Image (cartoon, rainbow, N blue to C red; front, top):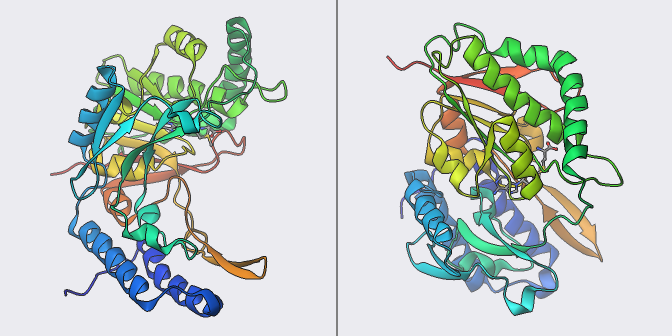
Length: 365
Ligand SMILES: C[S@@+](CC[C@H](N)C(=O)[O-])C[C@H]1O[C@@H](n2cnc3c(N)ncnc32)[C@H](O)[C@@H]1O
């Protein structure tokens, strides 16, 4: 069998750690360790996934997302989604009876390469199941109390004013400079995971979510003013499954169209700016597979040390390992895509985003 090339960037560091992890599990749980045979099968399965990934097999093919979007739009109660080996799996979009206690809606699960290759010492056989980068799960919608449309308007007015006066806003405006954006034409912004505006936790709305929507409008204005949209209006789309009807109404009034998962990914073209802040899904890895956009504004990569940190923890006398299982991790493919872009870090003392980088795609000659 050909030797596996483990990529050198964060995604694969976790892959290498799976081996370390497996060794750790073997010695720490000597009394209850899995049979060598099972571990050999698991190792073979892991190697197969890594090999396919290294060959460039997409986890999130555009045509698969398009097909899923069409099934959902047609109002089907059950959808069919192929696993990574192209075997179809059928899922109900209606919450099954046995899940109604803890869930009230379906959700599209996207599994990053880290998650697909995650070795759980307690459940090693999970790695013997067919890899499913896209599947359907069930969850509960956020239960925080809703606020009225007028309260949303008032909060937005106030927070937007603060945002516009902030140093972070000036820094963001200053990021769209020549020559980085010299020859780009950007006519669309598609945002992911900015959060709901219509809910208040302990009486407080999320200032970050409000400011991030205001920032989207700021970027749309800048792209037009600086003629990066070549005189066209910039269309704004936002995807977040937590939006409710009030969000949709309010955002429509601002000129932002809410799209359902997975339509946002299908809206991305070569004239799009993707804006994503701390989403709960692997937006980077999906974008890297679906379409490389003209520009990207999303969280800066974590320093190598933090990203790759695997820790052994002790619980009930057992050792277990926690690893780089963030919701939106980098990967070899994301790093490869970003090598095609020039990035400038955004200074955000106001903590409206955490740490962001503004990327512009380099001109191809
Ligand atoms: C940790 S919150 C971040 C909210 C906000 N951006 C912030 O920085 O405070 C993660 C957000 O990702 C959203 N999210 C989850 N699945 C998503 C999906 N499939 N598409 C877009 N957003 C998603 C969640 O609904 C939630 O609003």
